[in-house]
Length: 583
Image (cartoon, rainbow, N blue to C red; front, side, top):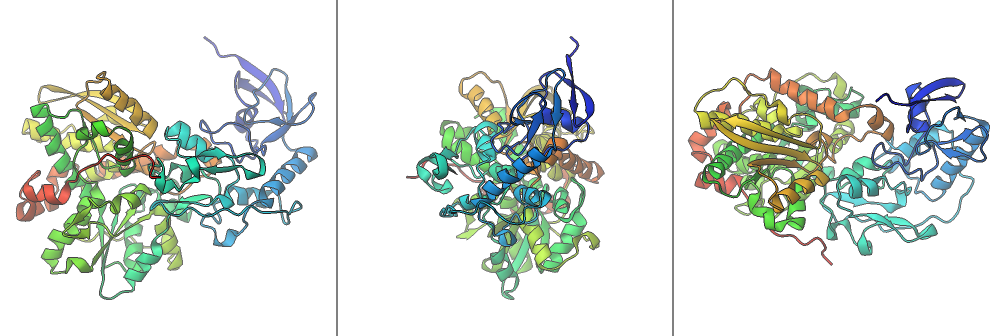
């Protein structure tokens, strides 16, 4: 059936748009930019902030273009004097109750409110009045909530409630007392927050940000008695460059390593190596469960936001989780045992810093289960954004850096480790090793296209050694919920399930560079970053985790084999039922 087209005029240009299109969308097709603030494509389209107002001939007042649908013969003006003055008043009112400490704000230079104030030349505030004072919530190990910088756009609320289906935050009270908070106005640390950080990605200002810990890293780097090791997750290398003006999805692995070396880290290792260990242990665990038909489906456990979610919401399904630690925790554990012994370093003097795309890793690293011999596997987690700040603080011109390689031995990884950073990647990497193990052959087909792509849920049946294995990869907690409900109700016949808390996987983690609503509506950020990881995989000499020579050596010298007593002690963990509310 042919779609009905509507003819309208916007700023003198005649446009044909599909019926049901908003004025905002129609204007964008011909390059007319209408400013927005509360708008977030497919997530928050409610017209609350009114920044996107336009005038329509023959109608009184203003229309909100992000929700107003086009109509036949409609004549729209987006930049009249009345519209410009109204937008300025709206900005003035927002700023009148906003803590304007922009120079010391973590979002300085990447704040949508700041950009609009600059665009509309807001140099003073006409409606100065009483400014609300709210206590900053910094009890969570992952997320800081500063309502003094909130503009009530509700983008975070829509993301938490509709995308993740958590609902940890909402708008409470009325009028001047309205604010975004939790049930009972308790800390995020005490409610059903999973620490995923997607609210941070949605926030246009500095009202939500990661709990920064780079001062602790600087202190350790300056301590001559501390052996400081950095490890970097796969998704970081395809996003860090964006903080320095590079194109989305640029692979900056070599420059990133050089920058970390210049910052003073004693060694710079690759979390992809940890991912290879995870695959070895996870594939072995899956084969055992599949062979014995025990606790199937097996569900991946490398996403800490997802793990916390199932602990709070579906504790009865915890036996289905793989017992494998996440890659950076595995590598941290090996650094303080195998590596420390090999290099003759006191494990108590080793300080492991994980550079992650994820703020939930900050929560994960301090879980009591992540200890061996009284020492945490990982001592500090900083995000991609925090690393970029450290590089800037050190006055390093990142774009001009030469490219260095990771240090050995924990810097040698496979292509399978690289694709861990995108949805479906963990599944694909595990299947590569599982199929070779089950068939006893070195199979050439290693791409599992069925679990690639940006869909929130990807289902497939793969045949390995003559046996059909039903698999599913889900990203985003709302999609995880759908899969868990199927399992709980006995409606699913899956054997292997991958779940990541963040929609799109780690490449879209809560600690990654924040993109404005405009960029997010125009560019598929996930695809660009994911494609870069797949490119790393394709160019890798070794693309299967079990063929990594470093792993072979460490298993031979220290761990013996996947699933051995020592491997279980160092590389595996346990889970617990967790209450949603701590008050």
